[in-house]
Image 1 (cartoon, rainbow, N blue to C red):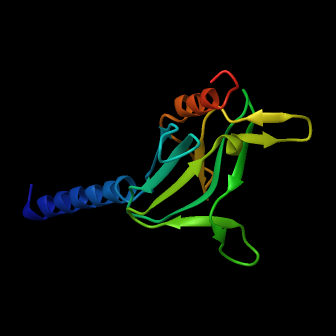
Image 2: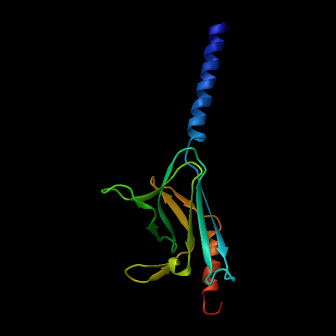
Image 3: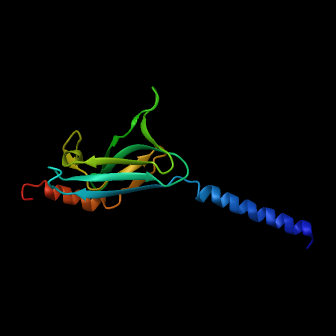
Length: 152
């Protein structure tokens, strides 16, 4: 093999690493978690703190905060502000920016044409339609429901 063959293989190797880095490191990464806050001397009502942070190197547009209300049903609300007159709402998170919202018991109730439903868990959806589950949301939603039940 000649020196030009080694240079060509080296260039191919560097190109492959660059392509891998573009698709793996540069993609959007949303991390979401929740924490249950019980009644204390500082707060009169229990609630769940839901947080999301953009761990990726590219901006992400969060559009919905929602949850599953049944086996094959879900409901959600738009988050953020209207970005353009003719387009929908959203919250743009740059690199390492975060979003935080307190969820009270009445926020877990949603109404459709037939009945009332309660969220079972929580998730965020971005502008591409990708859902990110909120860590520990199922457990914390259950705790919040128990705290607000007549027996609790």
